[in-house]
Length: 417
View 1: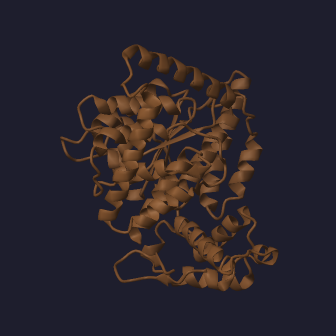
View 2 (view 1 turned 60 degrees about the vertical axis):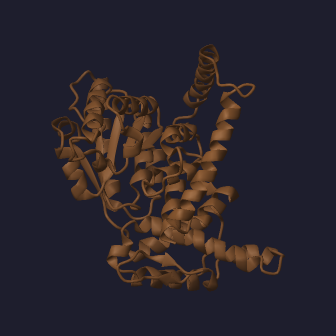
View 3 (view 1 turned 90 degrees about the vertical axis):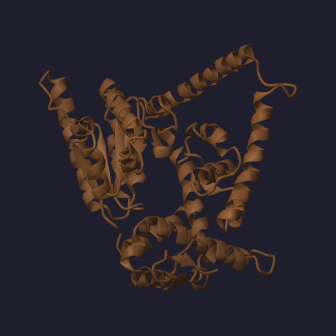
């Protein structure tokens, strides 16, 4: 169960980071290949290609929905052995699709064909860029309204508002030909997973665009695996590619502390050095937000003098309390027009209140997972007789739709079917 939950979270996280409407089997494949305990054949030859195939950002706002194929793949991954088998099959499918797209007549592309395809791909990207540039830019007040709609996070909202005030004052002073006080665009987000860091980072990207600080309002999310290669010289190239894709917007590095390895054989220091240089070279065209656990982020920032001088502002994200978790569940339900009764609300509150503190790390994500499991149970209930009536659509969640929670000792929380 725990492996499936982790795989589900990472799959939807990958799709969400690229603003994709759906999380597909390719997202599942990348999530599987990232797991060091899952080793399908030739995974090292194909992981970069698999990641690149989902790299292009889209424009979806709502949380991604798992396709039926992706859901089936995840459901099969009960054990590491089964997960490896799924990864093997997905990798075969991916390789076949790659061959169909990249080869002609069963032969590998010639250098000329490859270059022609590169030109075609560049033309496609230019069209996408023009579409992106023509997208209407939200006003500062419109983005701040989205901040206000977030559950909890009052301290975070105040810190972001303070940041906006600083930039607006600087912009006003520049209009009057007065000197402005330097305020860096780079930020450190510290807190447990599932506390809203990625969501806020996406809104900060839009704010920077609204304020005219950056030309784009997009966010590119990366992790250690996206930045570090296994050979000398390749890490710098991967970092440069990631930064290039985020240029004009925000590069969001999740679990950034993982870059600060202690081993001399680790290429994390090369990644950090490359990142620091590119942050300096592109300080007016790029913002970097590094995120992770509070103590680990202190270690990360202090691991390199260049990082310490560039990350001057820290935003801490606290865990949500039980009432806020219920509200997160309700917001998810409201997004899909699903009614939550007072009785169901009481059941949810009881679930969140009885969870031990250590199980609430990543609690926002837990609330969203609980919503998805509840929706699956509701689907089974209303479709039990083969007919879904209009009344059943309108009644929303019932108490029996909310799964029982298993809290075994020294293990993660799981759901009962």
